[in-house]
Every structure is written in structure tokens, then in C-alpha cells.
Image (tube, rainbow, N blue to C red; front, side):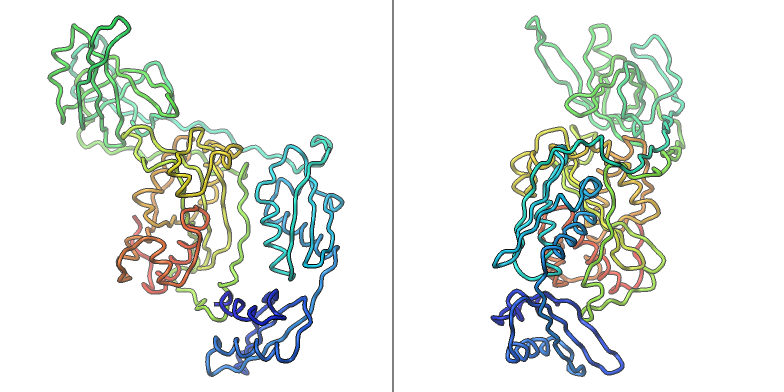
Length: 510
């Protein structure tokens, strides 16, 4: 709403660069005051035109007024705001920066500034973020650039480094039932939970039911045609894709295997192009015990410290905007929710289906007591190519993620950010959570499945032609940059709050 008001006010010539300083409501007098800041000389006619615009948006039972202040900042004021912007948004840069590293010059239409940074620091997005920050407080244009200085990092005072406690997650196993040899000479007693199989090993035992099996052909180095089997094993904790190369002594018995049979496979795991590949060396009959109930996964403790991604305080002007319903349903009070979204290299979120896709961006907002209060955002280096299709969809290129942290570095921080909160996402139960759960588990952090999915919640409460995120956003009058995780997460957070206002209760967790 405030964006529309400001857009119309800027149609007044002498107020075309103005900014909205505040909206003050005096409920006792039913009076609204809109305070503007401009850097141009304005007339009474300009002020009256602005007042007419404001009146269109204020409820009829309110009186209203407009106050306009003329403010032309000097270079020192702009420099102080630049320091604030960097402190709030670029923590690594802020600890190395001194005021002398920032130069500001006044121009006819605004200001130009230069930020001098150490050669080892990334400057991606710095000037864009700083300029946007300045425009919140001052009128005019702000043009910036970053240059490299010759400071040496070792000579700078740094914050105390903290290390998280090391903790090894035990691998769960179960007793194998009804073992019967096909080709094995040893009887394995236990099998590893497939859901825990995220490590390389020369010898590991898995056991489960065959979900699918197919014989395939290949030509060996001596130009001989040979057979191998590709199959999927399910042990009720997860599914595993496996390969088995046949032997003459057991080929006829292996050919008798079919979907639904329970088998024990002894083999090895190895990483291949980012995917954990299992090759069975020995196959026998064996079952998951009757009445098997998987033990609860033991997680590493929540990290004590953030290491590569620091959450940032978040303040949304619309949350305190008098034109927007800011009442909070009782069911949101005293609770914390993390609303998140991911961008990935593809749609494969099931490791049993082949090469699991990778996360390339995480965006998340923490909603506490019904108010968006913190943000968590980062690119993630997938350590593989990003397809042209994904780049076209998201705008994320390989260059943008080249210097980003890997999932091994990011997921502990994300797990800490989510601690004590209910997860929320759009189609999160069927897609995004599977990525988060898999990649957190692979580094030892086990999520408790507590999810609110805004997709079925929207289907329950709204009557729309479809339930895509942008369609629901249009319903609530929210505009955003679709297919970027941080933008999608923000809109999902806004939609989540609005849906709960309609429902007046929390839905069942998925």
C-alpha cells in the first residue's frame, strides 16, 4: 500500500525523488500524518497535491495531513549510512573496513562513493545493496564502486573464532532374518540402515526388498558381451540403487530373483560424480525382521556457533504499516516458524532415483510471534555444472556460486537457524524438505519432520485457478521476483501469515 502511495506522490514534479519517512497514526484523534523527505524546493501546491493522493488511501473516518521536510545530506552523513549498510549486510567486509576506506563525493543529482576493500574479499552485490540502503534515507542518485586496497588480513584485529563440538553420529544396524545363501560363504549378522548409508566403504551389508530389477548388457575390455543387474532395494528406512556384475557360478540363481524378494547384499560404496554408488559383490537371501521399527536417528547436537552464514535481523515496513492488517492470530503467538525455499540443480530429490540434485541457493525467514524477524540467505556451490535451463529459470549462473560455501559448510548453519522452529514452505513436504533432510543428514544433522505446507493449506482455504506461488501471491496483492529462493521464501512467509489469519488455527503438521 505504501509503495502505491509513494509512487503516486512522486508523479508531482518537485516530489519525484521524495522518500516516505513515516506514517503516524493518532488513534485518539483519528488522524493520520504522512511524513515525506525531499531534496527539492517544493510549493504549497505540491504539498496539497500530495495530500489529495494520501486521502485516497486513508479510510474515510480518518483525517489526514502531509508533512514535508527538505533534507540535503552531506558527504559525512552518507558515509555513516554506508558504514551502517555494510555492518548490517556484509559481516566479513565490515570487520576489515575503516571509515577512511570510504570516499564520498557530492554530484549534481546525488552522490558517488568508492569503497576500498581487501583483495581476498568478495564484493558481489555490495554496491547494489548499499545504494538501495541509502535510498531509504536520502533522496537522489547513489552510484558506487569497489576498489582493492593493499591491507594484509593478518594485521587486522579479528573476532574470536569459535569451534563447534565434534560429534560422530553412530550408524544404525538391524539383525538380518531368514538368511539363506545364494553365493556367500559367510553369514552377515547385521545390515546397515540404507538411510544411514552416506559414506564410502570397501565392505558394507544392506538388506531389503527388491523394488525393481533389470538385466542389462555391456561389452568388456576384451570385446565380450557380459550381463549385469541394476536393481533397487528398500529396507523401510530408504531405498538404494545397486549394481551387480554376474558370475558364471551363480548366474542362474540370480536370474531367478524378482520384485518382492528380500535379499542381503554385501558390496562397496564409492563416490562417483557426487553420487554415492553401491556395487554388490555378493547377493544372498535375507529379510528385514518382522515388526521392524527403525530406531530414531541420533543427530549431532545443534552447533553452538554459526560458521559461514550469519542470520540477519529483518524488519518489514508492511508489518507496521497502518494500511495493512497487522493483527496476529493467537495460534502464532509464542511460536517460531522458519519459512524456507530452495533453488536446485534439478528436480531429483530421491537418491534412489539416481544422481541426487544439489542445492544452489537457500532462502529463509524466521517468523516469531507472527512477525518476520530474521533472514537466512546464501548461495551454495553444487560442485557440478548448472544447466542452461536452471540458469534461465533462476538467473543463477555457475559464476555466482563458484565462491559460495558447499552444502557441508552451509547445512550446519541452516540446522542451527531452524532449531526450535516449525518448518514452512510451498510444496515443501514433497520437494524442498527432502533436499534439506538428505543433505543435513549426510553431515550428521537429523531434522524432526515438522512441516506446514502452504500448498495444501492454500487449496483448503482459497478458490483459485491454480495454486502456484505467484498465483497465490497475486491473490494477496504481493509482488516479487519469482524463482529466487530468498524472494520466494519471503513471499511464502507473507502468504503463510495471511492463510493462518483466514484459518484462525494451525494446520496439522506433515
